Length: 72
Image 1 (tube, rainbow, N blue to C red):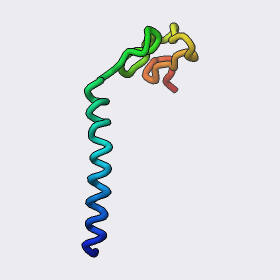
Image 2: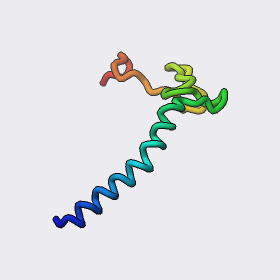
Image 3: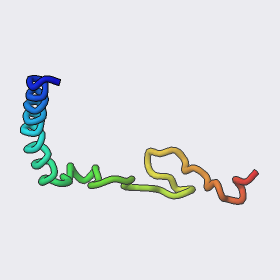
């Protein structure tokens, strides 16, 4: 590798860091934002449902694989 190639790589990394660091700082500082009452903060299902009573909009809950009726 010549000195010019190394210089070009250093310039490219510096430019990427200059553009990326302020964006990441703002995103991390903002944290989670509530988008309204219909979208929960964080992961997971807002209405998980149970067997026999599935969550709204979901098909019937899957049977427990360890249930006595599910065994072969």
